[in-house]
Image (tube, rainbow, N blue to C red; front, side, top):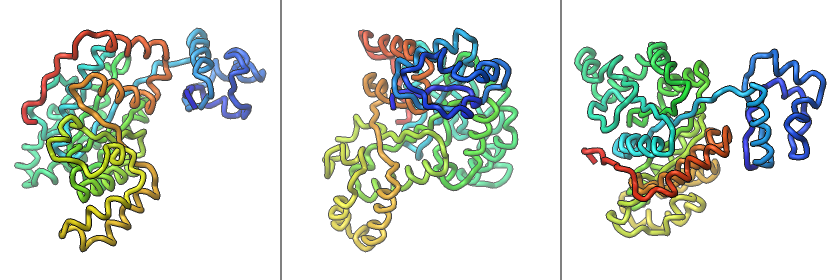
Length: 357
């Protein structure tokens, strides 16, 4: 399938397949009841797969001409372990997206992140501060972050009120804390995201960053796979796993396999020999084997790579994210114009690395 077409749910009652042999007008008028329903019913948009991108484009154009398509709001939920480069990613990604013509709003939802290299449109520290929580409730950093996410969920109206003025023309980047338990164990962060999706009708993709240096240690790589799988299953969002800082991977030594082995995650049995060479890992051989089989049985995890200072690397990732959340399908011509701006640019963007990396 090459495209995704957003049409009202009322078309669900007409099971005839969408094919490129029908014009948009024929599609919408294929029964006498469709047109009145489109004009009078509230729209709950559902994704219909179509087999031809030109048909998709023509249909969207027709719907726009008829005033039947609403402006959709897109964004990314940036998550990952501490040190994986989330804040650096939000800084570089926001600059890139602005260069291709998108208005970007970065939303900092990490109450522990008090030194931001980007201008954020919304900052959770205006609602609650981790230091205050730790002092007032005698909590450590982990307990304090869980408390902050719980507080944010209970005060979701505050975040909604801040986001609503930006809905008309902004692309969102949500910068979340690095405490991994928030995304595969606790439910507060997920509830925050789901409430925003439901109330504000957002199209979000989870971008899960993992430091590429973990590939240099088979045991750590298996841990990264389990974390990625658990997060995917828990978050229930369109999901992109990213090996970040790929430009630094050679500084950690030679990899046991080609990079494709680590990104495709196809046959993890080859890792076993390398794990057996480590005395710490060899005694857990059977457990590791079973865990690798779990990852393979689900068949969900793979990775794309990212060097945040390389415009081609960022461009490839943006294209992938745009497909997962549907941004690229809302206006194919506009998307082509966006990426052409970067393709013809003479230099990379003026990127400032986060000072603590």
